[in-house]
Length: 113
Length: 113
Picture (tube, each protein chain N blue to C red):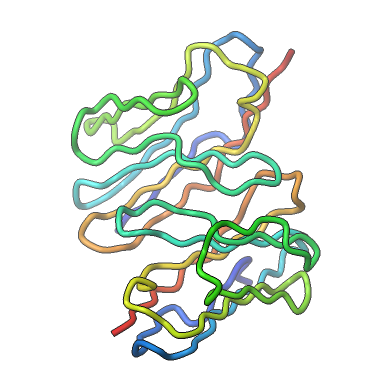
């Protein structure tokens, strides 16, 4: 069975400092992993995805994530936070053998001036 | 006590038929969404309603018509189903259109044969 855990419901960082949003997953098969962002009044936007290619995945807006199989993690990072990064972030795991996808509960990122 | 519930979970139907997928949330949220998961597992927003009013309407065929009888319900009606409509459809809700935290239903797998 698949599952995904976002370890922090809220994360606050100062503008210009690094961002780390943590995600751990469990899957009995090599999963596909995604990070989505949701800004107020907008739908989900795909940030990046991992589908068994390079373990370090680069996404939009300067975000990247590293797939670590030994740690079953797919943490999202950004070197320098911007005020516009304030949003809700979802980690999503998908088993490529079927269409089931599992959402994490989301992490709210707050950017402090 | 399911927060966001979709029915049916599975739907198999023939081309040309008209079908509806229902979504209900018991969270007291003002904003609801419909997403389509495409063949690459990406989620794409289709519609968003805030207090029964349409606020997001992405480019989808006009065979798709959302209906919100009250703010706790957002149903998706599809006319003249086509093979390409086969997908998983997700309903979601958020507190309001300024709150990015979204809660997702478990999805409805639509198969058109």
